[in-house]
Image (cartoon, rainbow, N blue to C red; front, side):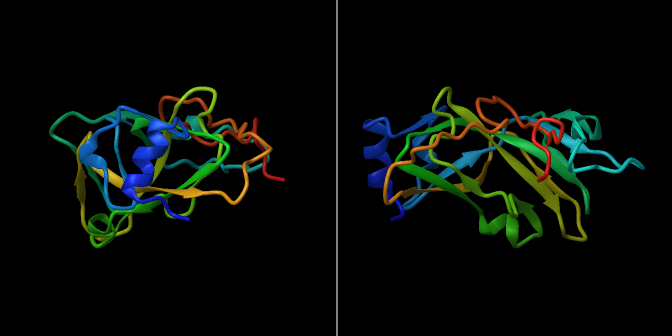
Length: 186
């Protein structure tokens, strides 16, 4: 079951969902729009191999702060960003991220594959959602801090989770690069 705006408001009141930095302007009929924070991580080109069993990729990124004049993303560039909102889901709710069509229509991809937000995400402390942003168009695209970037759609689980999300990306206030030292591919 996908939550409507009424369900989302009810679940916020019941504390099944918590959204810090909530804005009514971000509510849609069946989703909540997440906004992008001003701090990004830009992936730089490297001759080193990212080993998915052992590499902490933080050294592959440079921190970039967007000001109100925005940031131009060149074709092929890859960034990590985070949501202005901090999210907490209880054991009964999970979420999914979906790109806004206006960005898709110009070739800007946001969370092209890591779109699932597990039940209990942020349950210990509301956490930012990380965005993976790639410009797949042949043109430069400018983005701005604080703009609505993607839909967060909420789902009711059939039963409550009996496991808690304990991933290394929980309880974070900003985007975090992959760390295969802590979470190796298996």
